[in-house]
Length: 350
Image (tube, rainbow, N blue to C red; front, side, top):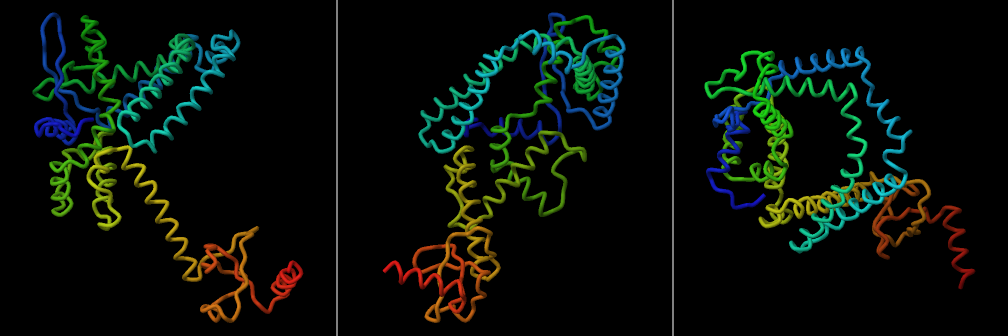
């Protein structure tokens, strides 16, 4: 997602998210019409689950196989061969390796090449799996999912005046313009997937949204029109809190603006920062005497009366920083048998 979106484009994205409505245009019987899409309400989502359960029972009664049955069929008939499974495993490993490389790559051209390779590996996996997916369209779970999808498509489509475009779900089922109906289903599928994460992250850190968010938090006014949060609204709140925590960091810890604007670089920076903070917390526990010795430790140092913290030590329980450069060591009482044995071993080696 480019950082140079216009002010109007940002406003349109925010309008879509905050008010749960999106303008759509489709061809209807050789004519072009505008519609309003809105994510279904909790009541409509509940009814879609009911219709799915009902369709599942009906499909089972009609003798349609389950997903488990289809998976067994794919295995028994070697539709996806052992060779294919090995290739999928190899490709998965390559994707993991490329994603790790992507995190540490700063050169933009190199990052684009890596992203292209990841996409190619993913496409190949999808191509192999599609050999079995063709059979899965026959199973009862897919039939039930389709019924729920149809219901939610009907629920999400509105006329510009706000009313449902099809008065009843039955009207939607009886729609004679099948091309138009298929286009409507595709539009709802895109709405159901939600906005791309890169788009939501861009909005979350954009000044236009941050002003609204700050004003709402200070005045207690609502951010959204509805109390039932849509997936896009939940996503926007998540990333807003993420960036808010970054903007509230101490100046010396906060990443620069270029890093904040780059999703991958920022995530890598915050991962390093979290590890650094965890290390500092551990060292803080050590200095405060709360660090405990883990079983099987091999790092040990003999503390004598010359050590500046000798009087504060609780022997064999704490870990301290050593002047020898050992950052995590076990304290051994100088009067203990264990200490005398170690001193004896040192003398023998001399």
